[in-house]
Image 1 (tube, helix red, strand yellow):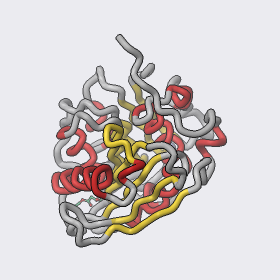
Image 2: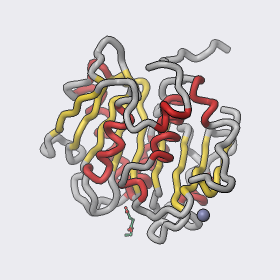
Image 3: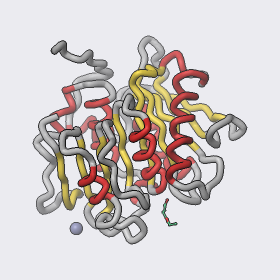
Length: 262
Ligand code: 9J3
Ligand code: ZN
């Protein structure tokens, strides 16, 4: 079969470059009104170099939280070469199924109607979200097999079976999560995903449910690698995913499961 096209953005990566608080692209951001239809607005972070297009990523917050709970990752991912939309939901009490539909509406808005749609490649879109937003990430991934990557962060969902998902999915759980325990959420979600899917389960050592709400280098580093590998089809990043990262003494990762090589 023909080799799928690759969309390399930025210089060859190193361990340092994916751990850095800022990547190689200068960025800007702009607010989207809460009056937009289908979701609650938010903030778009984007590379200012408009000589090329980028993959688009929508990031949804958790129950009762606003887009600002995920602000840190907006600029961090954008500076690596993605257009990132941290969204608000219509209501802070919306459930995962609704959050999934709202991520879908925001993906369409980002690619088709936003002020930066010219630099968004609508064929290379991804979903992320925290907690119920991570549950929503699984929902939209099941509904939209055309998505290129999904990253649920300490996801919460009453539905534990996701065998129909065809989107490469990295689930990031937190070892000491007492709201969406990994034993009832992240691990069953991961295990329910098809064994033939490109998938990974990364567990943050000693972390709580709210680890994704603060600057977190482990989350950033592996989110960048997953998005680069599957949204950009940039195999330069495969080295950070396969073989699996160490879970040994001194690692920030307590457990890692994968379907390497990708
Ligand atoms: O942070 C989340 O979205 C939480 C999930 C949760 O607390 O569900 C209980 C209703
Ligand atoms: Zn531990």
